[in-house]
Image 1: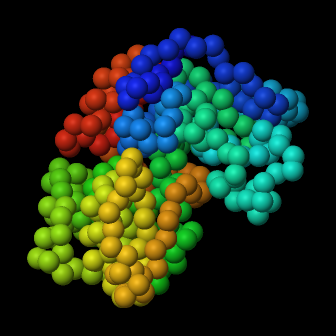
Image 2 (image 1 turned 90 degrees about the horizontal axis):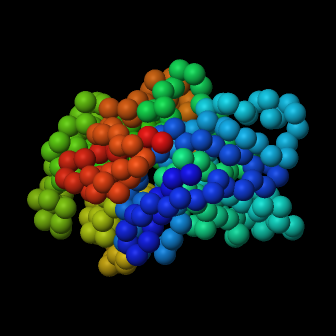
Length: 334
């Protein structure tokens, strides 16, 4: 099969054998894969990953190994998306780690992560995941919507971590792909959502979804000029400078949710956290069932965020295109 892997900060094509399946695992033919900012950061050195990239996908189950006849009938040929953290139980490790015992599988001490940590990902014609990680895509959800389930679930995680209904307004710092999904999810629970971003064309996407926007320069002068503050704020700029602005804008005893992942260190002054008694919440992967429900109900439709779809064979060109100004979601069609 054709696959694209990270090598020396570049995306290179490889001809690889199909993934070998463990018991309880499925072989999935990839239909669409999404390019995420994390993929770009990996090419810059994040996680030092050298395998096949890609963790956002929708595909079709081509084979299942080591399951009952009923389970095989349930899964074969079905459209699926998949949770990216593969935990102890899927590998048959005994005893399972302390995090898995507490059902915190996304924090499994021995986990691999699709396309990110020791597990080949979705920039390929096929990938392998445990059946326990898979979710069937309902018929009324298109492939173009389903490919967003993983990042949309990450946005939904905020609603599991914070009682958003206690807040009358929330700020989202950043106007990129994840920030756009976060704002749409928060809009289902909070009356007023304001997105702060540097790009007029990206802010326009948010306004069309009924989200308030404010253009900023992305430096300390923004807060000095506006003095805006919020009791709930989500930092999703993907930039080290975003954290400093987020700390300034979070009210005393407010809650700051951190969503950015990037290669490198972020300089930060910790005194605002102490003096203002800010609650800082790290937020990563989230509930696929809630993301699928939002797509199925039509409350959130991420498809308008798609800028362009490339054939898988042009993955390197797609990565370059995804980094151009004004570009939102770029997909690969296998």
